[in-house]
Length: 470
Ligand code: ADP
Ligand code: MG
Image (cartoon, rainbow, N blue to C red; front, side, top):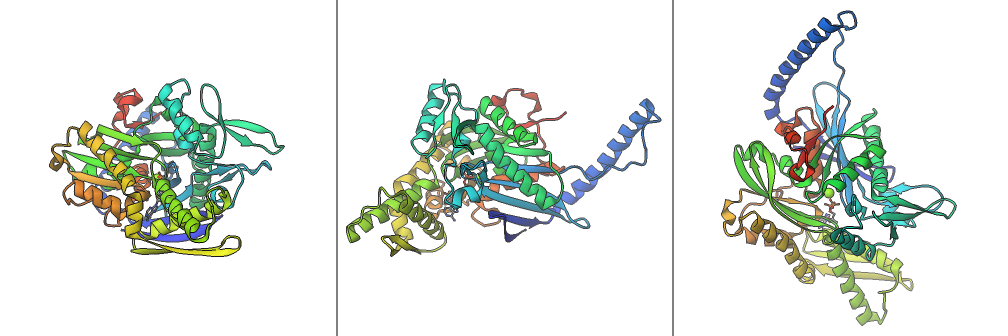
C-alpha cells in the first residue's frame, strides 16, 4: 500500500510516499462526516442564538490547516503528513534529513544533508539527548559528559548544556539544544510547506519514552521557536505500534515489545494495550549505542588491515577516517540484503586507491558482542514487564530504527522469542520510517482510530500521549 517516489531537491534526502486512504476507514469517515456536520450545525445554532447577526450561515468550513507529523531522531529526522490532491485521494508525504546543523562561520547555518555531507566546518549532531538535560543532576551530567567526548563541538553552560557555535565575525555563541533543534524543525516545516504549497502552524511531535518533563518542555520550546504549535506529543514506541495498526489488531487488550536500534541510541519498551491506550510496562535504553558503533567496528577492522598490509597507520588522520567511515556505513547497509559488500575509495592514502570487501559473516563476527547489547535491552524490558519467564504471553514484536534491518540482530530477536513472526520483516513499513508513519497517521483528523486519551493525567511522567487543545 505504499508507493515510494524518490526525488532530490535542495540537496536533502527527501522522499514522498503515496498512500491511499485505508478502506477500513471509509465507513468511519462517513460516520465522522455525519457527526462533524451535526456538530457544525449545532455550533452554528448556538452561535446564531447568541449573535444572530454576526454569523454567516452559508460559510462552509474550509479544508482545515494541515497538521504535520515530526519525528526528531538522533541521527535522522522526518516530517510527514497528508496532502489533499484532486478529488478524494489523500496522499501521504514524508521528507527526511540528517539531524545535523553546521555553522560555517560566515553567519550562515546549514541544516540536514548540507551540514553532514559537504565537509561543513563545525558540525553539530547528537544533540537530541541534550534536550532538557540538567547539569545539576548527576545522571544527566554523566550523559552530557559522555556526549562531550564523542563530538567535535564544545558543550558549555553551568545549569543546562549549551553548544558553542562559531558566528560570522569569528565570535562564539552558546546555543541551547532547544535552539539547535528548532533549526532542524524549521527546516522540516519549510520542506513540508514547500511540498504542500501552504503555510503550516501545527505539528504532532514524537519523543523518546525516556524523556522526562523538562525534556518534553524543551521539545515544545523548540517547536515554538520553529513557529509550530504542538497539538499532540506522543512517545515513539506508541507511534510505532500505531503505525502497525496494533491498537486495532490487539482489539481489547494485548502487549507489544518495541525494539529501537537507531544510529546512536537504542531502547526497548514493553507496552500493554488496554482501555484504548498503550501503557508502558517496562523499558530500558542505551543512549550511546547504535549503528555508528557497527560502523566503527568496520573502520577499525580496515585500519588494522591497512596497517598490516601497507604499514600505514590511519588512526590519526581524521579526513581519511571520515571517508573510510562513510564507505563502511554503506557496506554495512548493503550487508543487510546481500552476503558480500565491496568497498572502494579513490586515493584514500597517498593518492593510492583503496579497495576491500566484507562478508556478512565477517560483519556479524566483528559486531556480535554489540548485537548482544540490543538483546540485553530486550531482556531488561521484558523482565521489568514480568514477561521474561512467560515470553509466549507477548503478542507483538515491532522493530524500529535503521539498525534493526541488520539480519544478525533480527536473528537474535527471533531466537529469543523462539522463532516468532517479527512485525516489520515484510517491508510494508520500513523500520526507520515507522515512528514517522505512526505520527503521520495520527495527524489525520481521524487520528487513525487512536484518539488521544491522555488528557486526565496532567503529569508528563504518567502520560505517553498528550494532546494540547485550546
Ligand atoms: P534515528 O531514528 O535514531 O535517528 P534511524 O532509525 O534513521 O536513526 O537509523 C539510522 C541508523 O540506521 C544508521 O546508523 C544507519 O547506518 C542504519 N541503517 C540504515 N539503513 C540500514 C540498513 N539497511 N542496514 C543496516 N543499518 C542501516
Ligand atoms: Mg528515526
